[in-house]
Image 1 (cartoon, rainbow, N blue to C red):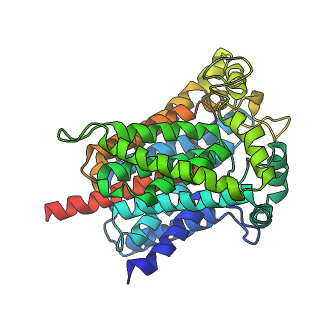
Image 2: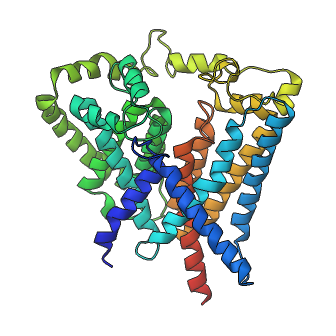
Image 3: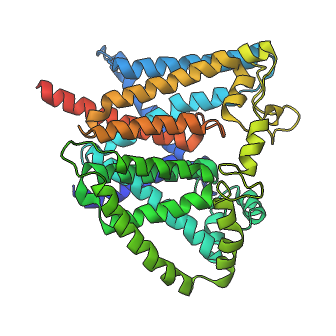
Length: 434
């Protein structure tokens, strides 16, 4: 079947799985439905093999990862039981990792692996971030577009309220999350474009530069955490990977096209953007976006949110530090986290202590180290390893801000990249052996 016909299905599957929008007319979020379907299919295939006395084999690296996740699933469950808190939030998040995220990721990649290469799937990931960016920008500029997409979501009332509070430029998009976790996914799209530019100089095209710009704009509208992803993307482009490579050649070529497009679009956009939207950009978006460099305190790399975050990291009691209190959600008010902290590592320490937090970090270190091992599945270039390394640094660093390592959308994105690397690595390894 023609790849051109199949590609839209890949885009739709990835978009609905990763962004997981809570569509009003569906009983469950789209990502949950897709993940559950593939979980049932894998389970039925496993049971059929057992029934037919066929050998069941699983890669030892994948098995190691599954065992580690299963361990933290059980540990989270036991903490909630032993502490008497009955707080199963983290248990459900880790269980979803096993039941929805990994099966859904492997299922989608296996389904389309026959028709596409690993690079094709990476490009599809870029396309879904571009599609989400267009939705975000459309909602920001046009009230009709905003009303339409909000009307499709079950939690529309809450999003409309949050959007109004944030002066109409945040909490947009057709996704499960609409703030900092969304900005992180969008910025990974920018990092993926940077990798494509590094792997093939023909990818330094008008199309990809436009994609880079569009996604970057959506990052600023979603959350400032995504700025780090844009920064890492520039690092990927700048770092030389070949001895014969002209220093900064790709970066300068990309930067030249980017500057011309940005300069041209600036005057074009000003001519048709409604005056009220331009005022929002001037009075709210720009001050918020550059607060890290220009703020009331006159201190660089400081914002109100980072100052608040500093107060939310503290030294708990010794027993809490070691084993936690078993609370993730505030037992007095389910709308807030335990001890009213937003810091990702702090939330986990308060729930299951440094023991559980350490296990969580080990899981991600194993996951990213395996991705480095499987990097050949995408391309032999060192650029892939740099991309994976920076992804790992990004995720572990961003978890300081909020609970990223059990967040629905970002975890699924990493699972899709992991599945792509593994399955194509396995195929190439098999081809070389034979």
